[in-house]
Length: 397
Image (cartoon, rainbow, N blue to C red; front, top):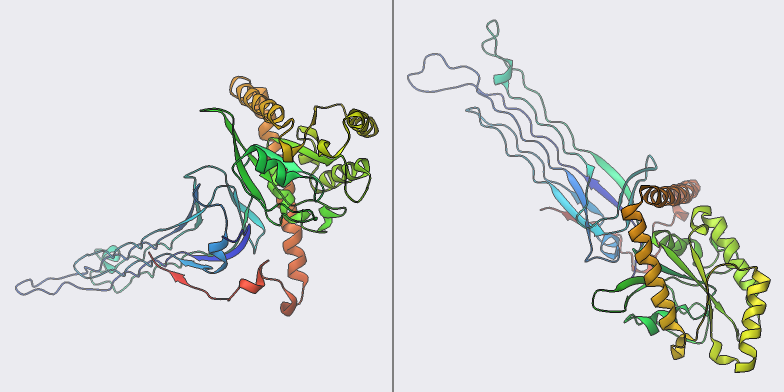
């Protein structure tokens, strides 16, 4: 299945039904009177978080979603049927933005979370409501109002506990393959990973956490170079970052410069994300002679001035990976415990999330603003034009 993490859709709520103009006409009833009923309310459009979805690919081919209109009122004081609401399932981790106002409507982060995105029109009133002692045959009714119509931008961020950060070919995909059941593509060339991959790391019967592998970053990623800006946003949902560094790069580049470039790009993209706990993971130790390993590792640590946790591993041979994931699980468990017991710890985590979301929204607004300035013929409507058939399907419940 194709991984799509951005999509544009149009949602339209149903219109309210019109009120009815009617008078009672019955045999042997000399005095009739108004009996026009009210129309029905239009159906609304809701988005609902669903953990069974992990991509927005369906929204690339079905872009128009419309709820049912309300039925018009009828005689004999019969009201019209209300339009049925439309519930559209989206992946958990989806941010919903109004393209026209750049307003963030909602951030769907929980399974079953329901968000109203287009409210149905109100019903019209029948002429029975306008009867009075001085107006016994009113011919006045009110029409139903139109339902909301909105252009929405959906942006999905994967939900994971640990995110892998690093240069292309640093061994991130190999690491997630070695500690989970995920099977991302692995090859001996850069940019093998083109989309995020999720893997569940299981340590015991009820002990597990989710790890996310995103495409490798290059210098200038925060400004859109490579695939970085598009996929860096996925790391904002994680609690802990593994900064994977290739200790023996095949092109003989400097691991210290590569690590510093990653730190710089992270800070440029999101200052709040750069404050997330980050562990240094020195990978590919198996490529060095045993007598050189510790000396090379210490030189990198000293050059970076690193004071946080450091792990020496070989992802391909599973050397040191058990120690790494065990430590990560203990850290995640302790963080959850602190947030449950300490209100200040919970407040700090919530504030961190708020800052990252504000920065993410600013990025979205900046990107949409640039897109508006392009000529219409140059506007890029999505990221998968080859698969875009520009087919709009109206969905009716």
